[in-house]
Amino acid sequence: MKLRKWIAWLMILCLLLSGCMNDTPQTQSPTSMTITTPTTATQPAESRPSEPDDSPASNPPKPSLGHFQEADPWDAPKFEDMEYTRPDMEAFNATVASCTELAAGSDAEALLDAFEAYLVQTSNFITNYWLAYIRYNLNLSDEYWQQEHEFCTENMAQVESEMDLLLHTLADSPHRDYLERQEYVGEGFFDAYEGDSIWTEKFTALIDQENGLEAEYYALVESNASVDQLAQLLVDMVSLRQQIATEAGYADYPSFAYDFYYQRDYSVAEVKEYLTNVQEQLVSLYQQAMDSDDWASGIVASNSKDTMAYTEKVAQAMGGSAEEAFRLLKEKELYHIRYGYKKLGGAFCVFLPDYMTPFVFVSPTGTSYDQLTLTHEFGHYARGFANGGVDASIDVEEIFSQGLENLSLFHGGEKMTAFRMMMSLSTYVEQGAYADFELRIYDLEPEELTVENLKKIYGDIKEDYALGTMAISFTEILHLYVEPLYVISYVTSNDAALQLYQMELADPGSGVKCYLDNLDNPEPQFMAFLDSVGLESPFAPGRILDVRETLEYCLR
Image (cartoon, rainbow, N blue to C red; front, side, top):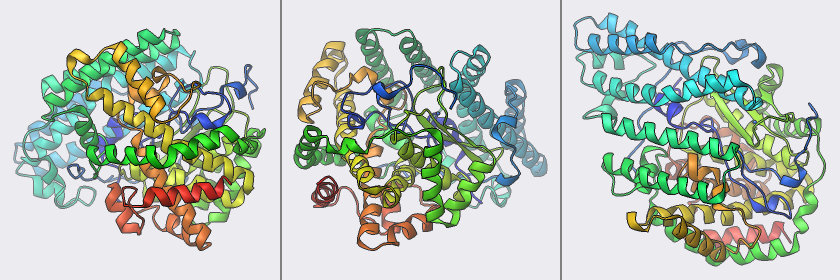
């Protein structure tokens, strides 16, 4: 079985089975929201408990590298019994050096042994990174887990760069064919690693600087820094990221990020045209819906038991691998959905390669929104369970999370449907607005890159997308700081997820079948995935009008 390409485990810190993150749709509450964490959609501020109740056109992507020692997820311990060990970086570096030396030698078997040892250590590093990340986020005041998370994060760029350099070295090795005959590598794997690695000394140093600025962001948020301080940090990040793109040989950072991080098979130009269509066709509907707020009746009280029961009901109704995945999640307690006073807000799902199983983290709001959030994260969980953690683009992965939310509506009632469809509409408009803001600020010339200009551009964005006076500040949008150019994936995947709902509405059972049949679909790129499944491109002529008609019907 092919696994997620190793480099993607390290590149995408938060958080789909790469983790999933999402900034706040304003429509989750009649009042504005705040961004505090990685989340599929941030919680209503006024519903957050104040006290603990004890009740988280691009180049083709490089190929996936398989795992030669597949673990059975049913053999995994419960999450609380999973042991964390600080990664031994000295041993890791020694193994990399050994592989590099043996790659030029005559002993193919010795190289294979060293390479397999390297894969084990890489898997250990990734697993321990996520264990530290999860446990730190369960209690942000825990100094031990904070230190362990910082240690893993500080070493990530090194692990990532050494991985890419090593794979390029092996591509030039006389033992390349021998390695590719191994089932977990596969014929042609090293084709994508021919030539020079992007990870030059300067590129690695720039990525280290970026990691430092991201750490500074979290520190500023924790210290309740001012808007101007956070805005200046974003200015510094944009400037640095433009340097990263230049060093990597790209004309601009959006083109670099679309290719290097997200493996998108659509272009920045297509997105700009698409966002213009969103403004023209959906913003007026968004305004009408916000003015009526009838959809808000779908927000009712919900405790963790209610939340778990909702998602379990959906999984059982879906059947197949979705139902089996939920049994694993529940039996092995591979989730945390209770409130914690020092717990990170938001939600995410990550994959633990040593155990071949995902883990779900949700910070609850105490409302029915939690039911959709857990279902969203469980969509990622079911995908990882079904395909062994094979990595695809963010756009593809988000289809399975948002798609399951939409399919759950056939078990959630009219009020839940109206609430969810208002969230879908807000994803088109609000996440579209954030994506547009990003593209505009990365278009600025160096001398134009100032706090004042960022504020002016965001003011224009709020007007263009009718975000209103209660819109969050751009300094509260987490993705701008730690997952740049990510948010458009919520919009594109939201469209594909809506198509699953439309299928199920028109022909009961067809949307569910399409979802289950493609949980292990290996196609990594978004447009190609849509084509393989028979779904329409969000950029297709007339598609936005079709979206508007469906949303109007659900919000009537």
